[in-house]
Amino acid sequence: MKKIVFLLAIAFAAIGCSNDDDGNNTPVTAAVSFKFTQNWGVNDITPSNYTTGVYENAAGNYVSINRLRYLISRIELHKADGTTVSFDGYQLIDLADAGSLTFNPSESVATGDYTGISFIYGFNEEDNVNGAYPDLNAADWNWPTMLGGGYHFMQMDGNFDDSNGTSQPYNFHNGTARVSEGVFEQNFISFDFDQNFTISGDVTIEIAMDISEWYKNPLTWDLNDRSVNLMMNYLAQKDMQRNGATVFSIGDITQ
Amino acid sequence: MKLFRVFFGILAMSLFIACSSSDPDPADPNEDYIPTPKPLTVPPIFDRLLPPPTVPSDNPQTVEGVALGRKLFFDPILSGDGTQACASCHQPANSFTDTDRFSIGIDGLEGTRNSMPIFNTAWNTKNKFFWDGRAFSLEDQALEPVENPIEMHNTWENAVASLQSHASYPELFNKAFGTSNISRDLIAKAIAQFERTLISGNSPFDKYLLGEGNLTPQELNGFQIFMDESRGDCFHCHGNENSPLWTDNIFHNNGLDAIITDKGLGNVTGDPNDDGLFKSPSLRNLAYTAPYMHDGRFATLDEVINHYSEGLVYSRTIDPLMKAVSRGGVHLTESDKADLKAFLLSLSDPSFINNPDFQDPN
Image 1 (cartoon, helix red, strand yellow):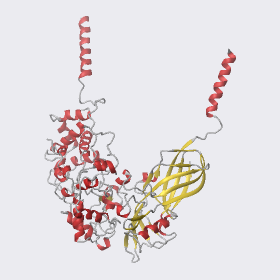
Image 2: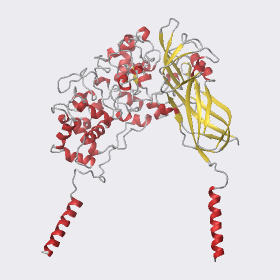
Image 3: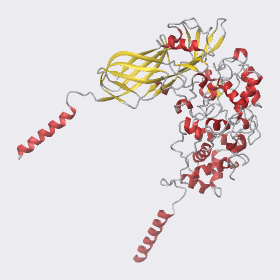
Image 4: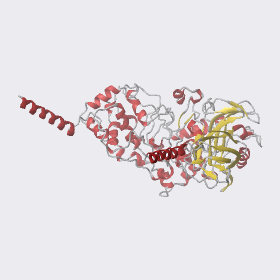
């Protein structure tokens, strides 16, 4: 009888140990969040300082920022096994609202090796549906129907010193491009970054926007030439899209 | 003697049990009491395009709470001399503002801001109330006018005492909140409940969007001007057909003054970059809400349109969306101005100001 009790005790101890001491503490899944940061070259731009700085763009315009909002959608993580994790939802980043700089998807992800991160700046054609998103409607984020409808992708407003040294406003707004009456062209940008990383626990992935890139690469954007009334300007909209291709990068991945 | 003591003890205990079980003191909060829920009535156009209304979890809408709030809103009992109610400066016929540039308080003193209209507050997405955003909830907002020396000029102690000694209010609070012990917080909650019911979403333009009505060619052209970045460009601050609040609920300096004397949001945040910024008002019900702007400087809608067309002036914090300031404005033609005005008036909602549920119940 003593032997049986002893064996049972050993068996229970072994089972108990095997549950939490198998030599591998890596959880099966992890929470992921995305942190959106902004910079102008080496200068960090945050909710607490974005209205106070003056920056020089590639054309030599001295620029201040009064308002910066932009939309990111369809964030995906690409696993080493070839599968993709897609996150529902979108994020309207607004520097006037520090809470909007973090996107916490409801989905958790599998731990393991990953090879890439992708997302869309703005909405793609399938998602950019006029009036479809109540929270964006309430935020007055819509893009005029006469210009193709859907939603703004970015709204950056501020002032610059013109060639006479006089402060002038700029409205750098981006969305669907209007080609002509009733003819529109999609204007979103798909970003697909190759990046090897391993998720072993809850992780925060930084998506960084270098604002200066909107003004310099490949086109040097002089606000003296184009500063306001850009929404209905087809060439301005397409030039924004071209310059936007180098605006985003993947920053720190912390866990 | 012993028997008498036992009898007396039983009698006392019986009385105690009887009182404690069926005759509670109404001044004690009754945690188990649940007033009758009364969800907000959401207009179809809001239901289609906007998030659900926001109601704080600690102040749900109830039949009894709304009725109490409505009675309080129209009752001058909250003011220092019993002459002024919330409704004195927030009249139903004027979409819950008044016709004065600056409202007059009980001591005959004039304020410095135009009385704001009250509607669709459950969709105030930024939860900042007043022209300068200094209140962070509707309940907070409701607390201020009672003690403001240029408004109702009372103390909350006096206001609460007046209600507490009133013949009917203690019972109405008991029905609304499960206690007859009146407090300023419960008063503010009741008023906020009533104010949240003030929902306006049945204008001719709403009916047009729902396919239930037509607009005139002039109104439709006015809407195009409103939405045209190179003409009106009103939509960046004042909504659009998919954003039917007709406000962004954000604060702007809209080019009224070269020298800012009222700092607005800047007084609240302490940030000089916020000086001269005021909340975008909704464009609904403009037919009833003159005069216009935070200081009521424009008596007519024509003056407002002329301001944006030719009257903009530069100041350091002017919003960059006032992009034509160097030319004084967007320079609309007289025809465009008339059409824009016609469209703006199509956002007014007669059924709102005439709603019997929103009138004085006293």
